[in-house]
Length: 570
Ligand SMILES: [Zn+2]
Image (cartoon, rainbow, N blue to C red; front, side):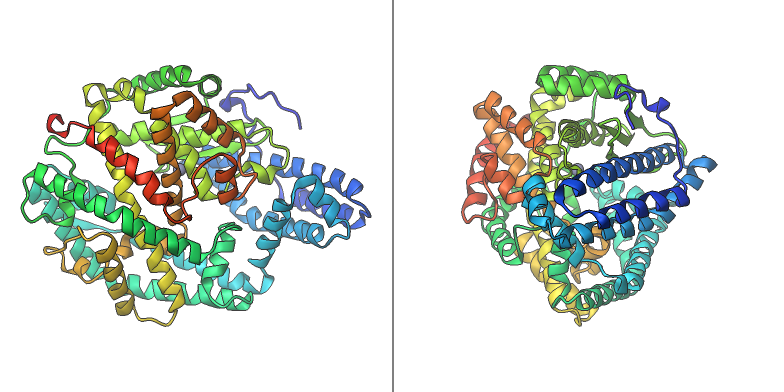
């Protein structure tokens, strides 16, 4: 199907695929592929199959975007339900298709054409699935949905109001210390009331994941989780070495930063909630509403480089963003992709905080990569794995630094300082979440109490500033119960830290030689997901965080950048 890539989003056709046509088509491709005797004929089937999959993916994503913009629309809701029904069917067929390719006599010839990495990905994907685990996967899904339900449904009484966790979270960042303390205590009480339920739920998740791993022939869930995340070039041992580097090189720095912060705030015995506030003057706020910020972003991207200029104006001209919070809109923000139109779409809920600016830098960083990878022929090579994908977005946050006056006015310097400090302080926390999960799946029979004990030990090692005198539940090692990834996306958290360490390299390099750093970044974006993480970094002249000493080499120059900030004036 040929389309005009300059079509406006509102003119995209809204098509709900029917099961019959979909199954006929996919079964047809599988039959054709089975009959192929050579790579030459198979290549043609693969081409047609990929084209059809792009059409389906495009239809699915249009439905998804329309629905998230208006969740009250009945037609969109019905289409979403249809999609949920069809998705597993599509996965099943694509699994079938891959199986034939992997076992084909002419596989070597296909590898020459498409690259060995694609087939490695196929091999791994096949190892993570078997029909006999379907009931367990359904169970895993049910349990993770239950977690979202419990957390989303929290109703906490606070100063005469009933709040959910996000609403209460705002008060834990309040300028007034008493408010922060009271909110933290309310949170702690809610957690203690749900401790048993959440602990049991996690126990069941660990059990079912371990069960799935055993059925697929793995010793524990950990290696399976690595494969699920598409990690083909690093293992738990390398990750441990990397975590140790963070503990050794970053924790001492963050401890220093937290001390400076407490001094700034004038607090003698700081508690964990005090660190939510960077300055007594509050957090930097953007200078205007959506229109002001989008105009600023347009100016920024036009100036930044020719690629971003073309990209951002395309997004504007074709109405490929829906940014403002509106009634009926789904919460959150994301960047998705329409393969037929070769274009991304950015969705968010602006709320007047600095998170709005983050959408315009972070999500559009993802978007730029998708836009620049659109011409990669093998569709699988357009999508990087998560630890690589976050490099594009997090680095864009730093490439946007010189333009922050447009968004924050005279608070731009404060924004840059907070941004950098937050990013550094995230690392020891991020690796804690990871270390904890490795322990959990190595000890699948541990009790809830044992898990909590381990969490607290890990926390004290990496994040010693976490003081919980007023919050006894957290003191007993319960913080992790609030970290959704631990429940819903196992082992996917370290990815953010792995991307951050690379994004820092772009910050450092861009201050030394902007043109060179920018060229490198664009090249990286254009590479999409052609290589696994470590190879991608090496090919683009970036330090691989797993190599001993590399974390230190990235962190040292940041200390210098930090020192140059005049925090007295903020
Ligand atoms: Zn992201």
